[in-house]
Image (cartoon, rainbow, N blue to C red; front, side):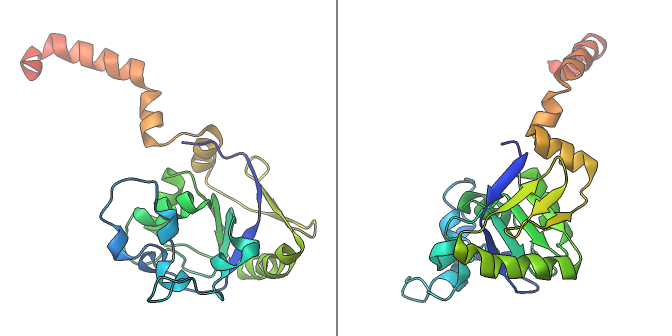
Length: 205
């Protein structure tokens, strides 16, 4: 997993509440188990019309936000089903950070497991950052998310502090997913298997 230290980039404003995982990644794109190529399907029904043409009014189709790395959204983001394709698609699009007042638990956990930092902030802070994303990015504004310092610096230079679980923070800073965390215990795993093989050889026959 790619390390997350300091992220600099444009933030896309999505002032919608209860954006569920079917809106993020519609069901027709769940046939693959690959984590790549799903960026084009993110928020598909909001991005494209029935003919497959882009809807020019949607934020991710606007020139200022096509390469966004940060998404600022409304409350209860990622609700609905537990599909892991939703964070896969967001990551493949280019998002490494989502900021919202609250998140659905399973989506929140899946994001961290896939290298996406989810930041929950009070509504007033989200509103302020949302306004900067809507106004500042048209002037080339850039946000900076510093995970080590736990700060968000907006285009206007204002700094917002955030909290995150320390274990999740450690894993992101060091680029550790569940497999890599397990492999850190490889010596202990091998020692256990060797001991078990001697004491219970029938398990290995």
